[in-house]
Length: 214
Image 1 (tube, rainbow, N blue to C red):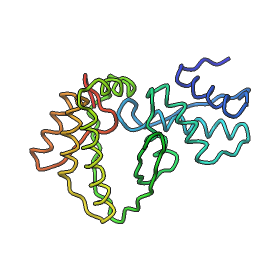
Image 2: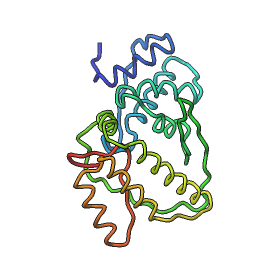
Image 3: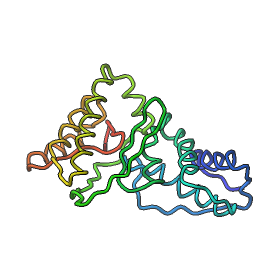
């Protein structure tokens, strides 16, 4: 009987529960170049890959909606109350507008004719889990107002991408709002400050991080 981490065991048990399979004699090896604890959705990507392997082993054909539901349940282990953003990104792929309204998920595929050029900088792995960061934000006073402002900025970015334009100052606005939520550590703030001094624009990805990387 192979022993896996609690996270992996949760993923496998989620698959068993939903498909009523036993996964007998099933073993696997994970290889990934996607950094963990870096706001890039590594846990959702891992879940999706593993669920696909499980389905192939059991000769099951699952549609994208089924995979989304499986990943959402698996993400509870890593996120507590997952929004569905990461699960949507790995399953439906491409550039997506994602919104959850009263528990109902809305998705829209966005066609990008002229993608803006971005550079991804690794500021260091976050010491906190996404779940811990979500719980941290929940304690921030006036967070609802900040979140609404972030939503407005996001809609502006979506509008510009659709029209093949991009105003980098919107990244700066988004970053300042994230700082109000106290999810940006000093290390990332310093990196972003240096980028802005060079007339660039930057923001953190994912849930952020406080003690070290964001």
